Structures are given as C-alpha cells and as structure tokens.
Length: 265
Picture 1 (cartoon, helix red, strand yellow):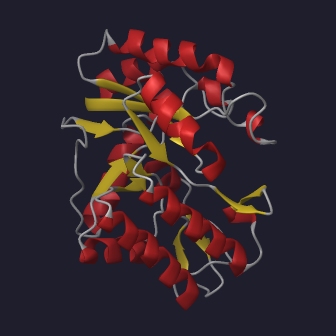
Picture 2: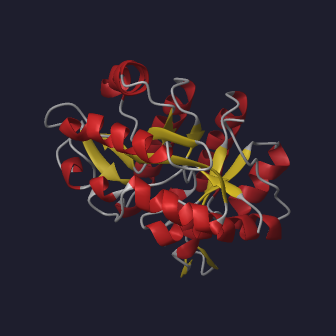
C-alpha cells in the first residue's frame, strides 16, 4: 500500500467534525500515511466574527489544540504538522501572521476562503445570488494569496459548489483564472479537495452534470498553466483522513494530473 500525505484535517473542536488528533493519527497509521497536517478552522480573537463561533474553536482553545496535535504527533511513525485553515479578512492579517503563525509557532496556515465581505458583513460564497458576490470573493482570495501568509489554497474552486455558477460563464471562468494565475505568480499550491469530491455531482445553470468540486475544467486549466497542485482529504472524521485523499488522487490521475506529495519535504 502506497503511503500518501494529507495536510487538511479537522477535529471535533470545529464543531462540525468528529475525532481527536490521536484518532486521526491512529487511522492514518492503518491506511498508509507519509505525513499528516492538522488545519482546524482558525479561531478569532475575543468574540471574533459574528456567526463564525458556531463553526470553529474559540480563541481560548488554541493552546490546547496545538498541544493535542503535538502530543499525538510524538507517537506517530510519520511527521505530523500543526496549523489552521483561515478565512482571510484584512482586518485580521496580523492575527494570522503575527499570532497564529509566529507567536503560536504553528507549522503553516491554509487559505480556505468560504466567504466574501460586503459592507463589513461576511457572506458564504455558495449562498450568494449575484455575480457581484463572486467578484468580491475572487478579489478577496487574490489579496489573501498576495499576503504570503499561506502555504496553500484549499478548495480554490469551492464557489462552483452551487448551481448558479458554471465554468461556461465567461465571468466565472475569468475570475477563477485570476486565482490560478495569482497562485502561480506567488508559487502557492492549489488543493484538489477530497471532501468536495465525496459530495458528488450537481446539474449547474448550463445544464451540465459535474462534480460540485473539484471541477475538471478548472483543474485542467491549472495543469495547462503549470500550477502547483496537491491533493488533501479535508477530513472531518478519522475514517476519511487518508481515504478521501486517495480518492481525489485517483480523480486527479483521471485528468492526467500528478500532484505534489509533500509540500514540507
């Protein structure tokens, strides 16, 4: 059994996943792991962003989260890394770079943009009803990439997880191409996401049956342009920690893509 890596793993602390770091590591040992990274959803200081407290740990849990990953990693037969998956908001740039990354001595931060910002309010990109939402999302993602804070971009085609957005729409294709181009310019890997692949298919507004994400056309373009591509599980339960990563690697292979295996090697 070939051993593989995955650097996108959640724990029970995010309130929509199950399992401790030790649970994920034990399963990864069984399934064949080369290296594993934990990147639970990052907390925000104090009360943080309204609404986000229901889908992420509190800032009071940071030290315990990091300790639990480090302690469990000491018993693993492979390297274990500790980080956070972050929603980029310029207001919190120092929080990401100076506190979560530097002061907390984490190994990496992931850009996992699920939201756009309008008049100070955060909107989930997969619930928007207007292409203006999409453009705000693209602009925010590009700004985040350019900060140099993040080690890779999780599910960069997440916004296509809705029927209203189609790759056949020139505005959508142009916006996502901007994300690919910015990632290439900043030497930042793009992640094909195993959890998204597990969600199956939808029929979008162009009457096309396709994966929710990853979406083939996006990844074919990323490959053609020479983007760095990785595959991760985005596991929310221990059973998925390696299996989802294997599944999305198989999908990548079907598109002629050979992903990078270890971004920390």
